[in-house]
Amino acid sequence: MTEPEPAEPDLAHPNLARLRGFIAAFTRLIETETAEARVLDEGAALLADLIRVDDWLPTAFAAADPARYQQHLLHCDPLERFSVVSFVWGPGQETPVHDHTVWGLIGQLRGAEASQRFEHQEGKLIPAGPRLVLKPGQVETVSPRIGDIHQVANAADQVSISIHVYGGNIGAVRRRAYGADGAPKTFISGYSNAATPNLWDRSAQARAQPLA
View 1: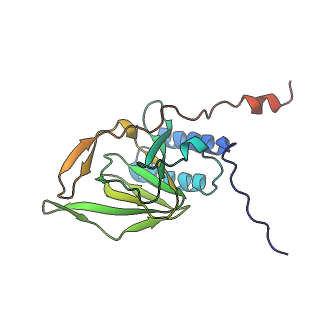
View 2: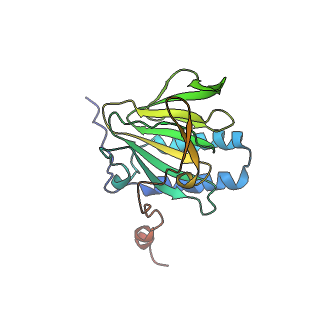
View 3: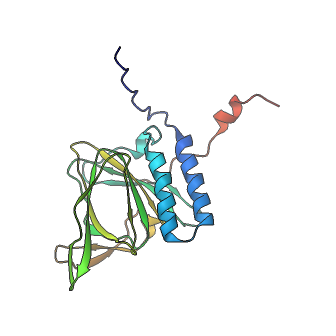
C-alpha cells in the first residue's frame, strides 16, 4: 500500500501557535543569556525547530513581489532586543552585498537561498569561503564577530522564503551596502509590511474551553 501524499500547509488558517511559541521561547532566551555565542547556538536550535514544519506563516507574509524581494516584520521585541522577519524571494531576486551590524540567524523555510560571504582584505572586499546554499530546515548565523558581510540570492526557480532573527529592530538599523568597487553606502532597510500578524488573539481557543 502506498503512503498518502503529505497534506499541503493550510496557510489561509496558519498554525500561529507555532510562531507564538517560538517568540516566547526566544524572549526567554534573550532575558537569560547575554553571551552572543550562546544566543546564536541556542537560538539556532529554536529557529530550526520553527522551520522544521511549514504550517504557520500567514499568506500575506509569504507572497513574492515581481519588482524586488520582500522583508516582512513578523515580530519585534518591545525592547528591540530582537526581531523576526520573513524574507520572500521571487526567482532571480538578490540583495546587494551588505552588512547587518548585529547578530543574525537565517533559517530556510521554502525553496533555496544562496549566500556568499565577503571580507575586507588589503582595502578590498573579496569573497570569503565557498558559496553556501541553504535548503529547507537549515540555519546560518552571521554577526560582526564571525562574519557580517554577505550577498544573498534566490537559488531556486520558485518563490523562496527564509525566516531571519536579528539582534535588534533590523528594519531601523543603520547598515551598509557595498558597490562593485567595495565602496560602502549607508542604508536603512525598513519593512515591506505596514502591519504585523495578530499572534495574540487566542479568544477562539479560550471560548472553546469549558466554562468554570
